[in-house]
Image (cartoon, rainbow, N blue to C red):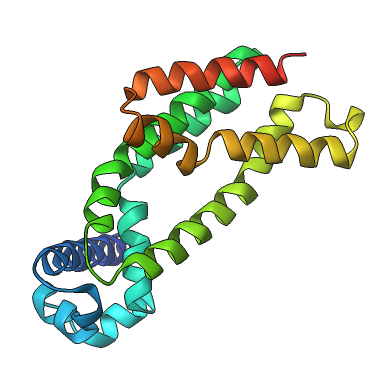
Amino acid sequence: MKRTYQAQNRKQQAINTKTRILEATKKLLISFNYNDITVPQIAATAGVSTPTIYSLFKSKLGILKSLLDSATDAEKFSQLVIETKSSATLEEKLAQAAKMTSQIYSAEQNLINTLNGLTGISNELSLIQKELEERRYSRQEEMVKLILGDIKNCNQMELQKARDIFWALTSRNFYQLLVAERLWKAEEFENFLKQILVNIFRK
C-alpha cells in the first residue's frame, strides 16, 4: 500500500511539474521572441532545474508539442473515444467522430491563434503540426475499421482509401478553413462534417 501511495505521489508531482513548465513557457512566449527563449530561462521561470525539463520534454520543441497536447482535456477526449467505440450504428459512430473532431480543434484554437501570432515560431509550429497529423492518421485506423464494419470483406486498397478520406475530412486544415477563416460556428462545422461522413461511408 505504501509503495502504491508513493508511486501515485511521484506521478502527481511529475504532472504538477509539467504543468508549471508549460505555464512558464506560455508566460515567456507572450513577452519574448521564441528563438530568444532558452531552456534554462524556462526552468528558472518554472522554478525547476534545467535537467528536469530535458528529462520531461527532451527539448524546447518538445515543450511546444506538449502545449498543443495540453489544450485538449485528456479525460474528456478519452470519454469521447469510448462513446464512439460503443455507438451501435454507423450514423452514431460518425456523429461521435464529428463531435470529437470539432471539440478537439475548438479546444486548440485559442492556443494556436496565440502561437501563430508570435515571432520566430512558425517553422517549429509547422513541424509539430505535421507530427501531430501523422500521429492522428496512425491512430485513426481502428476507427475506420469500425466504420467499415467487417474488415474481412474489405481489401487493403479500400481500407487505405477510407483512411485517407477520413483523415482529410477530420483534419485541422479543414476545420481552420471553415471555422477560423470563414467564421463558421463549431456546431455548424460538426453538423456539416457528420453529414459528409454519413454520405460517404453509409453502406
